[in-house]
Length: 113
Length: 112
Image 1 (spheres, rainbow over the protein chains, first blue to last red):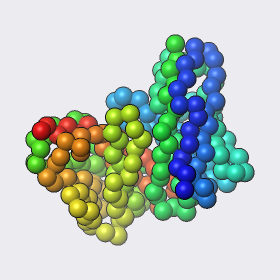
Image 2: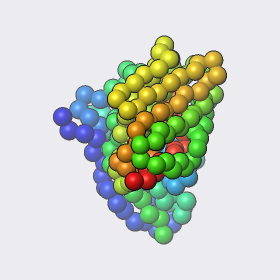
Image 3: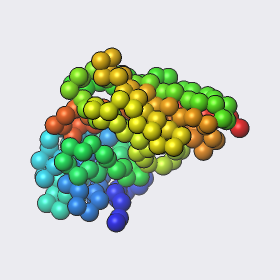
Image 4: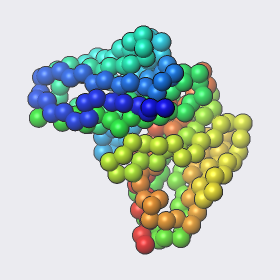
């Protein structure tokens, strides 16, 4: 079956702009988690969605938001971009049944100039 | 909330040697501990995991051990090969939660 698909793979924005990233989980998976990856900081948890509801949230400012649709596809949005938002944003798909195993997408690499 | 500390941040070994990466977690309610391998430019991929009702798990050259009392777990790679070179992340998941928290990663280099 198809894996986790993230779009776009690469994008460049300028400070103050906003960006929307998309993630399609593995078919049948209902949980989508988002992570920010930067050098030296590892994988930092942003939020997790299950059945269109945000179940968990990390320690990021309100400029970071997300949502999940009825088909389990998820989007995350970052408003008023800052230079420090440059990172690889990874989406992870899970069954949502607390088995724990996550399957990652290739990520969306955001560069803020 | 859960916090996972990982050491060392970098590790260099000679081919054929063993490598050990250690992680500690803060929340005693955590019950699932995966290890992910991320090769350069690629996505993280699960290589092994362990649940809190097990003390050790092996899969060929890799093994993970868990000490619940001390709240730490370790990844052991034996007979390392150059293709083992990657960044390894440990994670912790609290029972009843889907919030998987990761350590900051260990960059493993296996020198031929």
